Amino acid sequence: MIAGLEVSGLRAGYGRVEVLHGVDLTLPLGTTVALVGANGAGKSTLLRVLAGLVRVRAGEVVDDGVPVGHGPAHRRAAKGVTLVPDEHNVFPSLSVAENLHLFAAGGPVDPALDVFPELSPLLRRRCSTLSGGERQMVALSHALLRPGRVLLVDEPSRGLAPAVTTRAHAALTGLVDPERVVVVVEQYTDEVLAIADLVYVLERGRVRFAGEPAELEGSWVGEPGSGQSAW
Image (cartoon, rainbow, N blue to C red; front, side, top):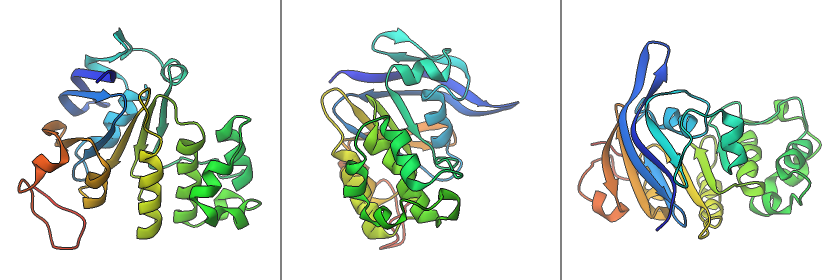
């Protein structure tokens, strides 16, 4: 498999606080990668580093053989790295329709409405007036309408009903092709493991596990039916 991004010895954080302590991982094109772990494990920080929003302190991010870890976010975006963050992920003063058309950059918005038909009657509403789940559907539409070659999605299930989460995960995996990798950050959930080809488990800023989802069986425990587990 061809790597979309490769990370080696990555250290990063905020101010004096280091969050990631020597992370190594590979994001192969043509796969869905699940990045999981408890709150505070460094998952969101890692996505922001990959998108160029958080500075690399040590180590490197390599895209198609070219080091890009110290480049600005706009260059990363120009190379096809798309981030859907877990917050501040829509334009609240704009309507749903305006957000979708911005995401689509002149293309059709139907792919988003097909996955989230709940948005159709809300097209004239400002995003500032939406519920958390409705805003999340608008945010995820960015991934559906302009995914890029490296798609990074942080906590797509946030605020969504279980049935909508299932639909969103299926739509994200449907975007995978030989020229694209989709990275989904979640806390430990059975559903995200079910859609993943490759899993990385982060714990306190370090990679605790890397491999296929089936290899995780028996490695963690959680309350039955909770959809969340811990080591």
